[in-house]
Image (cartoon, rainbow, N blue to C red; front, side, top):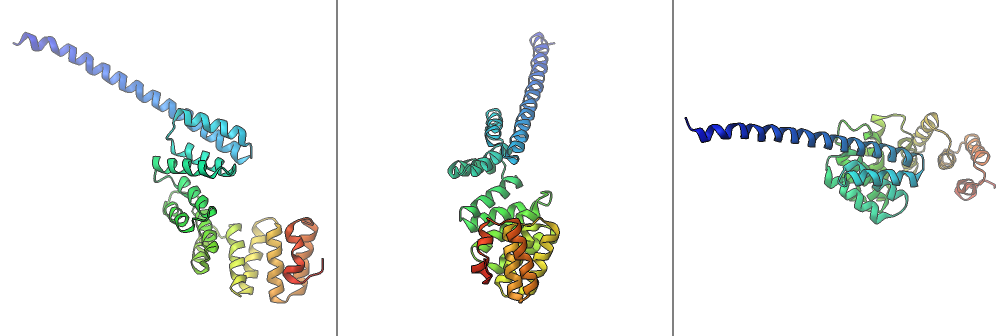
Length: 256
């Protein structure tokens, strides 16, 4: 029997066991790091949603310090920078979010909306289409809404309508989709369908100056003086200092 070979066997076993222990330790450390990152991202997103931008930024910076390439941390930081109107930084963080995870539907959705907001309409819709293609993403109605709004800016009303109708197919009570379908319908001379959409809007959402002024314009087109006056009164009563209240005269010829 080869004595030299026998002496090596225990040594190899020790190395193998040590390697497994080291690997398990690394995995545990990585898992802990990821949990810390996720906690900071969740806190940052929560503060951002509540408008506490400074605290949100601190939490997201902590997340990125732990995991600089974490897709969701970069995504939420990009949204924050967008809110702060630092568009170059927002662009940088969005690109990193998608580079880290090209299938992150939230990052694709937010980046698509950002691009549309910045006037890059076709590129924005391309990203929104990818996000909408993820069947597990719970905000596909909102993705289609954003694509529709983007295409209304182009303008490409026929294609925009397809996206808005898809949004309403997924969520029939989505206020933004109902509002923009009412606007799209009125703009194309379809006043009666426009009325149907704006009435559904008010059934699922609170009054806004924009929606009330649109309702006034729809009823003006339909020549329903009573409905027109009723919406105008709601606008003046609830939002007397709004720009929309000031537009009643020029929009419909109503007295101030």
